[in-house]
Image (cartoon, rainbow, N blue to C red; front, side, top):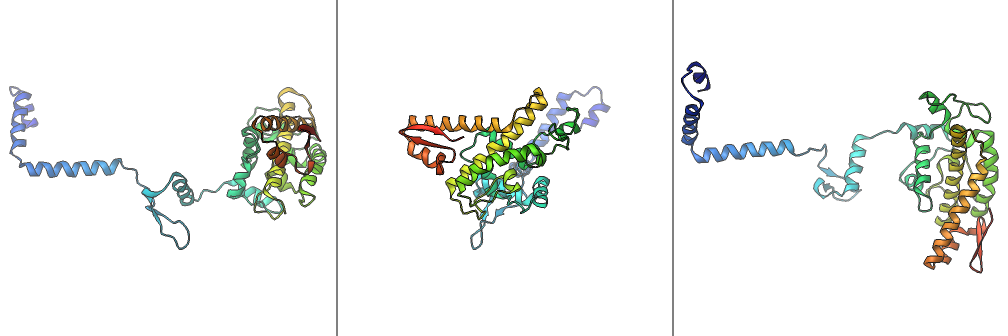
Length: 291
């Protein structure tokens, strides 16, 4: 009809519309309903996101769940396992640290444990994924003039800043006695622990309270070493990591002590922060620091 309309200049579009309407009205109503239902179903299928799986295994001997029954955690866990995403940083740590660290769900809980702040947890996360800024990385991005450590002129990597540098070695000599006191010398501190912490799966003979406190000390030590390097790169100031560590530890313990006093939870504070009186002790409700 449109073609005839173009060939006949005297025929108006209104006439064509009326003719088309008469043709549509001649179609039986049940045919029209069937066409509409088919079109609607196809449109819904196109708009509905499709996944590569319809069920999720829930463990041996258990019935698989339908996808519509999944909660958010199970859904994204299934997506992760389907993709089988490999994280190069984790493979690097497993290949280069002895004994190889256990980088599993327990480790991710250690990164942001209950005792540490979010900022400290961010440092742990960056160390684990090997994205903590160092002179080497900043030099590659052309935002820092050298890739060398300002203490020993060796290439400054994450391992160098936190473990290998002579400055770091001296600092860990200062920190280790506190960890020995908390663990009652049951824990042999390794480079893997200094870099990534300890998890519940490691057979260290520590209970949960002691393990959390040791991980907090290790995290505070890492942050002190990192901040010392940052202070030099940004402000050309040499600040000993020992000073940063002591200041941060005292400030945090004092904050927890004041909060415990306000909440009348002094006994819980002593159980957590005064383990073996390694860092502090409470005498007549007065906090005495050991740092």
